[in-house]
Amino acid sequence: MKIDFVSDVACPWCAVGLNSLELALAKIGPDIPVELHFRPFELNPQMSPEGEDATEHLSRKYGLTPEQLDRNRAGIRERGAAVGFQFGDRARVWNTFDAHRLIHWAGLEGKQREMKHALLKAYHGRNENPGAHDVLLRAAEEVGLDADRAREVIESDRYAAEVRAEERHWQQLGVNSVPSVIINDRHLIQGGQPPEVFEQALRQLAQA
Image: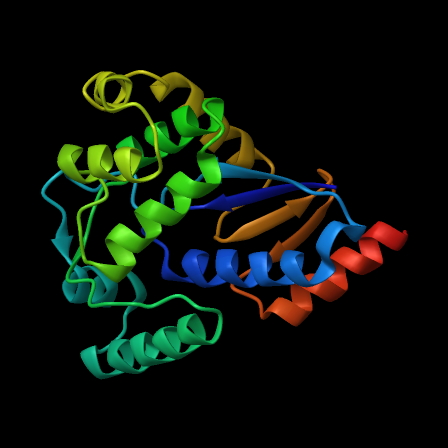
């Protein structure tokens, strides 16, 4: 079974959704062999390198008051804890394009899943800038990738064209929110669903 996990490092529900999906896969076990691929999506492709205050950005983008944002954040922290993801305070919103380039390269090196987790934890757990070169390099080293080769990718525009092409591909297929989980190129599950929702859907599709 092929699973494409379309997401952005800046998306908190993507952290929830990934941990939830992995819990479902662990419960299913070897009954359903799975190929999991991470696909790029940018919530804020025009975000400047210096980023923006998170409360100001989210209030303007979604029309929410600070009180509503606080309630939403509390809900996300609760959902994250339920699937084993610890959220910290995310003070700013950053550009994530370079993070997607590094995740793409990590996939070629067989470390895509580990890199995705490392960057989600860096941003959502430790409030680090996932576009900063030092954060990206540290994540690469953390998952066991060669530091010199990682630096070459980070400090160049390598894989930029590939990431842009993938982003266009999913947008043209109608993906406009994340996380979006596409199974066998045909079936779509959206949002940070609970593990049991993913498990039930995967079992049903495998039987079909």
